[in-house]
Image (cartoon, rainbow, N blue to C red; front, top):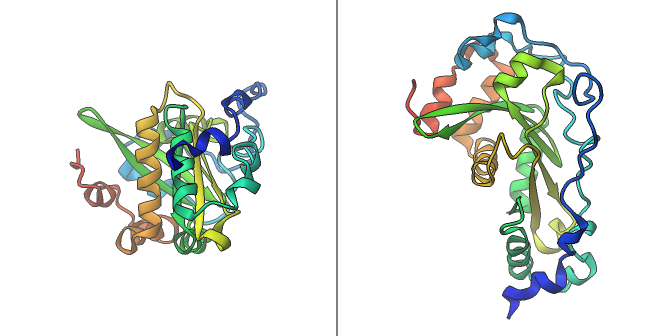
Amino acid sequence: MWRRLPLRLLRSAAAGPLRIPAPSRGGWPVPTVPRLPAEAGAAPADLARWLPHRGYSQFASGFTPLEPKTLGSILDVERAKGLSPEHLVAAWDDYHLGRGHIGASMKAKLYHLLEQRSATCRYFVIPLWRGSGYTTMFMQVQLPHMIFTGLEDYKARGTQASPYYTVTHYTEFAETKDTVLVRGDVVFTSKLTDLEAKCLLETAHSFYLNDARYKLVERFNKETQDFEFKDVLQALDMPTM
């Protein structure tokens, strides 16, 4: 049955998970970015007034030092060419079940919309519900990658903040199968569970692909002075605490 395709199509798990080299002295090597001021320990709703409109570089190097996997190291691309889009997605989803990684997919049209919108709006903050409250994640989109770190870590450590979670979008089948495969790798399992990582990815995509939610992303990046974190909470039906 086609549900068993991952056994033949996808690379062995023996290849191992994402390789993480030893950090350099003082933390992961990252490009220079503006450091938030000492007063950044205040509520997330006040974050907007500290974020500059321009001058950002990568806040954390989720790409070079963490070496995201190529698609060919995960699946047999030549064999995958012979699959229908439905079977390819099923194989991809099955492979990632229980492996400590997140597998997802999206239509090429949606990926192109994400690409278009993230080109001018690379940053956002997303609350992640935990028990009776939430923790806030700070994200950067630089397709085909997304990287996430804890907002409190970023405010406290600035350029030394380590990525908790990296996401890669694979476009090899965008034209032929109208499918973009998505893989998330949790860098620090002590900071983020697989379920939280899956929720975070879905929520991040929704803020860029849903017209109403994207207005908040635009406000965060382009009209910082008008951004209110409570609007994000309301969009997600979370209580404003």
